[in-house]
Image (cartoon, rainbow, N blue to C red; front, side, top):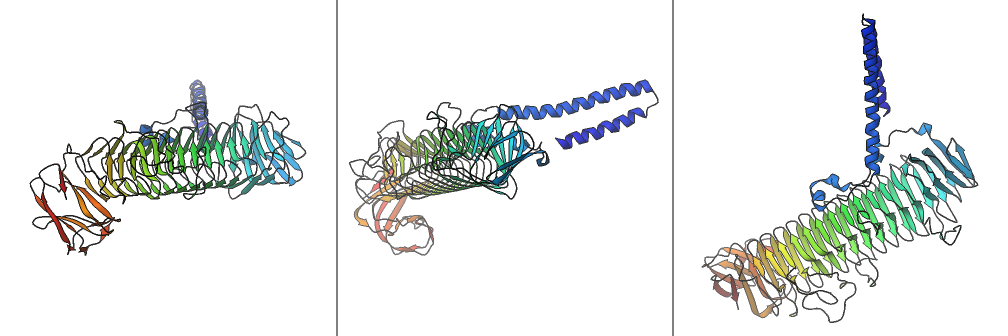
Length: 623
């Protein structure tokens, strides 16, 4: 702003000199008048632009749709980011508040001191520094302009209440000054003026929109309840945060937007959350980037509506991790967005007692790298799960992927589960953390409140899917359609489950599929498919690692695969299977080639020929 006005003033005086140099005085006067108007217009235009930006930023904007989110990263930033325009101030002009142990000094207007309590009553810029042994800062103003607070190496401790409390303001901006470390510690119990009050309830508590940015550090020791809370919106643009909280770590009731920063959060409740339950356009979380190390007793990151993540680095441990049990009325998810989760990118290491990713509606994964250990589902969406890209590695789960509709268009997926690897079913289950009676087996497994339906679908159109399942490998309480991609299933060893299990149809028209496991409930793709399949049900069980090899009668290799578990059935489908062609199937033997996920490319020898067969139908059964 200062630079703009300076340049305009220089131009103004330059034109003045030109005009006064003219011979015609009346013309000069006219030109001078014109240039004064031009200067005024330009200057007002500049002011209007800033005003318009402020109006735009101050207004609540609509949540991005999934289409917006997938096509435009800027759609994620659906609230004000005016801290990036927050340059029209100078610390030299700030009122200086200095803590001196048991007293407070104020130099400048706008702040009132009563003992060890300083109250900011006017909008403006305030620099706060020093150590306050037992007191607090209160912001209480009806001004419509911003209250800007520069945290300049301050330490505040309170034995009775919140050290920092925005009681009333239009908007408050906290600037973490470069290179500073600022520490806020509250009491383990709060003393309120009356029993009717329950606010503040966080060490840093704001009843107005709160923005925090800068290159300093903020340490919050929340002994009573939450660490940082805004009852309106909370935007964080940068800084280093170390938060320990009795309940939630960071909370923006209307929204939580994080555009950058480094966060270490240890919370007995949720690590980060937005929880407006009254307005469906609010209660969302948007994360652009940053570093996140979250340990939470409940959910790691939880949005009452939409959770959108563009990028960042996340290490999340929720509910004590995958080995812990969660009670029926508790939630210990890694990432939770009740209406939706959309992930564009990022690196995630999640160890959760409950679902690692969970939505009561929809999840869309367009990118990112996930390493997941969970006591329940790896990725669970009640209504729809769509995976378009990214790398998902689930090393421990009850069920790997679960939703009423699952669509896999791309990505690299590895999942290991004690029950179903990929489960298509409707409803919200708690089966992994709270198994019901009946034991494993069949659709859904123990405790699943699921039923078979023609509305449940698994679509595989691309990508790479590797399944290691204790229950069904691919389980659809409806139908499966596969048009492309690669699917490898190491299914169950018990006959109460199958490598493939579907109620409706399994139509395959493209892609590569191989599934090995028990034979009691083994199914092959449907005869209504347009790509040929083979199913071999063996008379005896083969040991884990024993090769299955299919080649043409002339010796051309079609597939060589080493299942990771004992198996008594093999299902194979590939565009390489041609009608009217004869093939031989072998078991055992060895391969000199290297393998990826049990698949070999060449080098097979010394196996025992099991059978010869000719492709004449869409599904050829070998016994």
